[in-house]
Image (cartoon, rainbow, N blue to C red; front, side, top):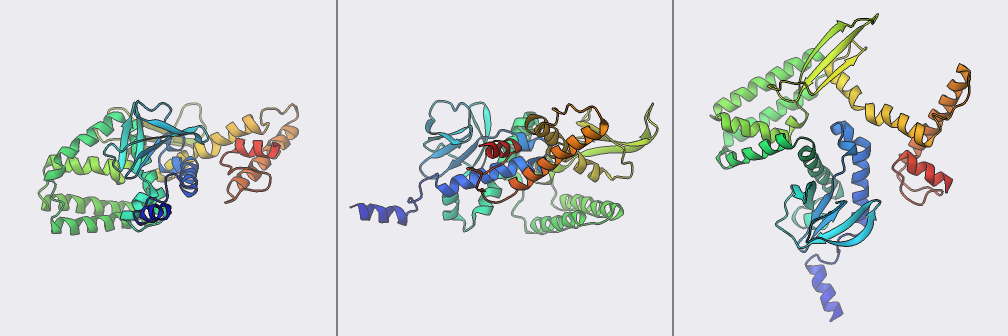
Amino acid sequence: MLFAAAAFMLAFGQANVFPTAEDKREIEGLLRFQRQYGDGIWPGFARANIPILLYDEQFEYLIGHPSPPEGWTRIEVGFLPGKDLHRRPPHKPSAFTVRVGDIWCASFATFDYMAKRLQSGRELHIAATIHEMFHAFQAQTAPDRFKSAMAVYAFESKYPESDSVLLEDWKREGSLLADALATATPDETRSAVANFLAFRSERRTRAKLDKDLIAYETQLEWLEGIGNRTQWYFTKKIRLPDYTHAVRVVILWRNQDDKEPAKILITNQTHWEVSRVLRGYGQRWTGTETLHRDGKQHLGLGDCQLRSGEGQTRHFYLVLLVHSLLVAQLRQGRVHAWATETLTTIGEACRAVLR
């Protein structure tokens, strides 16, 4: 009887009960990816606390929710550091972002459940889960925009998505966008973007899209595509009072009609293009701010008692050296002899060395 039951479970894909050891390693890996590279996707994404909901035929599994509402059963305390694991029977789960209690969560199938329907590896599952995490981040950080974007789905049934001419135009538009992203100089970029926008206008005219369907496209792009990273800007090289050198100011708006800017940046690199200014700003948290925080909290950056400038400089250099060595250690793909767990932060590395 036991053999027959095991054979039945294998035949119908129920042998690997979530979470397997590999499932856990995958979730640790995608959270590590979020912390290390999230701000490169969008500022603030690396530090966003986003619970993950994975589902299969039998259950929904909730990871990292601080206080799930009634109906969820906790099945493992400390499944990951600071994150418990809960589950419940499935409630029409879907791959997007869902609200559990008052918190938006990333929702996607478990790897085994996905693999039954789509022959693919762990890499795709990680990428898809991070994609849904970003949707949850959108809902958390821009709730009004997210709500208005979701409202346009009322026009989804009217969109001529099966029109063969429109589909070919979409492919062409995507190619023009790829061309713009591959340009090497500012002049080439401006020319390629102009071609892309002109073709987009032609496509919409050919497809006879009204303002509601164009709004549907625009909001869908914000949810799913290039609209996530589209901003409006004004930039100018200026001189400020009490400064002996010129600076470049960059003013950013999330939407074309916004009355207030989302951010104002100033740099002394007056020759930089706007895209380079934004890349530099996007690295501020993962580079400058985390160095200051880790240096002060863990590496003694603020403990120097030397009075001479030379001594203070040497102390700072030694802190930078230790920080560089620890960062290099974190980038190793395996646990070393002195560490008993996979290390993801400077603090974890320091505590592991001291054990």
